[in-house]
Image 1 (cartoon, rainbow, N blue to C red):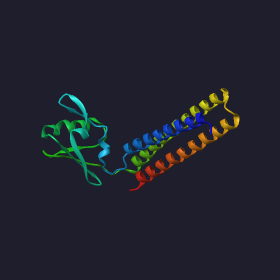
Image 2 (cartoon, rainbow, N blue to C red; image 1 turned 60 degrees about the vertical axis):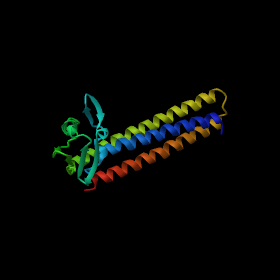
Image 3 (spheres, rainbow, N blue to C red; image 1 turned 30 degrees about the vertical axis):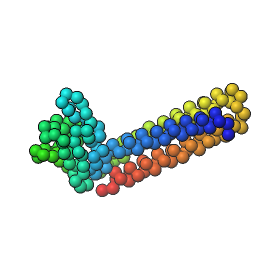
Image 4 (cartoon, rainbow, N blue to C red; image 1 turned 120 degrees about the vertical axis):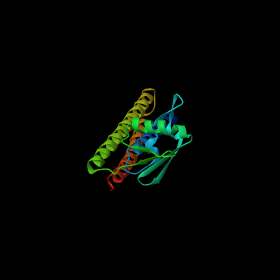
Length: 187
């Protein structure tokens, strides 16, 4: 295979890997009713006048499947952390007992589960759109190479490989979505 076509394939593969990684990260934000420290990754705490991620001001752990424990490194941070969690609009109710903050993660209703599955499918479809865009860009690059003298059979082979790559990453995205849907719908 022509080295320039291989370079197009390698670039497309790297971008598709990033798209799948992004999908995985977005799906972790769709909570399935189980307590997870990653639920609070987006919470920014006012730490002496500057905004800092919660995990840089406190230890965040799970006590059990439904309870998060947040232990600030400084007792004076209990109130700002509670306020930040409330302000983050995560539908969580932090309870401050003077030394740690407890958050009981409510179990999900059937309606809420269906909404979360819809949200996950939207994220998955965004990933697939990204994969198709990467495919289009790779095919356009191969067409430019063909216009600059690349043999037609090499170009066809490159386009076929790009399609195979797209299909395989589409299957990966579907598997991630399927797993998340199963996780969310399990009571």
